Length: 520
Image 1 (cartoon, rainbow, N blue to C red):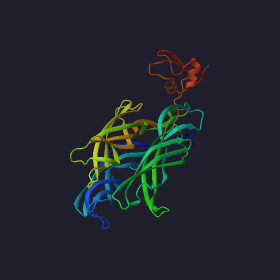
Image 2 (cartoon, rainbow, N blue to C red):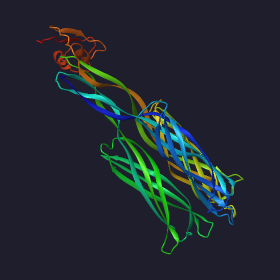
Image 3 (spheres, rainbow, N blue to C red):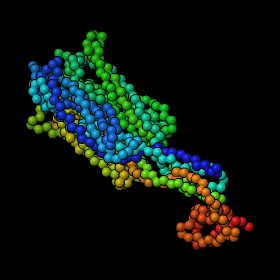
Image 4 (cartoon, rainbow, N blue to C red):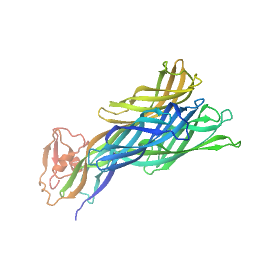
């Protein structure tokens, strides 16, 4: 029976294999419903892409999603009253794995790169959109190693400290938001909701002892048509959401990454006490996927031997995914959109929507260089009594440098961006845009580490020690551990017999006494 018992521990981690983006183009034709008037002019199109499912099929990931379109247009009728129509289209895309891998984790974010609509005839329009699937592919792995050896006092163990990123939590947390808006008597009552945009901002996450606290605001931008009027009204609400979730094993010293998705937006209209439609109830769900990573020092066995019987150490080399750091920075993007002679003169801004896209990022020493574009769409009232609404679009490039201590060339950066606030104002013959945004970064790299995965007692006998002592002259690369293992003794015996004060600093050329079978 073996005299030794290997005490093992396992560590789960994620390794970033690849991250990229995939184009997804949609082009469809739609009929205007019989309940809606003919189309005279299309004002703007808002697209809301949502990922429904991800499925591993063979050597690829099949992504299924849907896009909800809201088309705002001027109707071909007296007064050219504004109207809107909603459509939904499903889409699918494939991401090649290019390897036979199991336990793959794929995170996907879908953003609108381009969207436009065209009139085919008064009862038919076409919508063409380009969407970007931003995805990261992680390999979920586990390493088992020997952390200690028990069973006998004869075992000599040399340990070392390794820095490890361990996945401490991977949680999906659901937050419920509710909004109740009452339209004041200074505005017309609601004839029809034209559009409802939602976006999250002021996101906050706190990792507490065995708890995760999440909070954010959701800004609602609602456009509606006034009753018995062609007037279009914009109203807003800002809803606070928060939740505290119990998650065993997390603490404030850990790093995290989080992604948010808005789902199940239900909007309902109600009458007030006077029987007028002035109450808007909105209920929606925000799902947050939170990953928490520890950055801890783990004592592992570097080497071991027994002076009295032979043992075998089984070693394995692993490539581990590591996180250098996480962080965020706030940026401000400003520009003025010029209006040319083909644009109608603006009198009042009704709404401004935007999307942030990252076009390039580069990790350098202690920093990340980020480039991107802000795509904005502004709807405004004009000075033309007939064509009283118009819109203008623009792509505003930006670049910034984000500090990241310890980052080096060759590391990979995952960047998530979120608009905090977006404003449009009229300045002379331009529309001034001001956007504040938060960029969140996670810097990853790979490192190779060798672990002892098992220890076993070997058959056979140890070479017999010499009966006399040995005088050994220390060389440049010699350590007490190597000498003790070579001569079947212990580090403590060498320290005692040679009166060594600092075992980590033995002088080259020093003569050491190596004990034999007996010490006198």
